[in-house]
Image 1 (cartoon, rainbow, N blue to C red):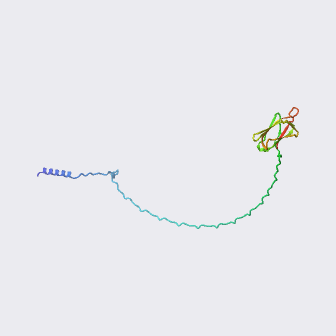
Image 2: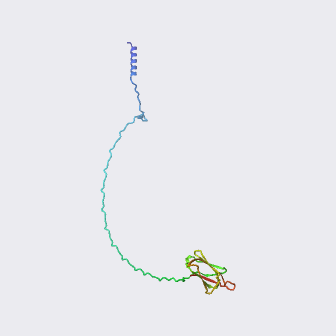
Image 3: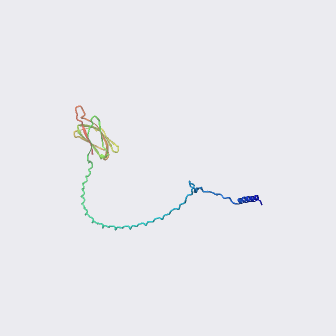
Length: 209
């Protein structure tokens, strides 16, 4: 065998070995390389033994409470005072007399002046009456007509009286029915003193009985 045959056989044998062997890929980890392309050195952490301290317990201090004895005071009782009730005063009732009634002045100092009438407002609160009395209190008055309106709205008119009252003269008029409350009274007439030569005005009073 010559030299060329030997070389050829070596080449074929190396190529066949290369084809039979598996391919190996080398991967490089660049994360372990710092900026200076140096591999960081791993350090082992240092563990220190924790220090435990014993808690300090203090004994609580208990104080004995102080009790004071209550003071009782004797209540004071006062004797009630009894007063004798006053003796009631009884008044003798006034016996009613038929036809008698305490007079009530409804109006006084009434004047006709230049008018032919004068009106009086009475009202239910004045009471109930059975008659009217007209009395002269100055000068001379001519009474012509009297109109009476009762509290229930009914009327009583006394016409054609034509009575002259002067000095201390008076006249009495009985009211219709039983004793009644009066709402108002109108007296028609004239003042006989109302003239050129008589300067004093006449007046009269109306009283209910």
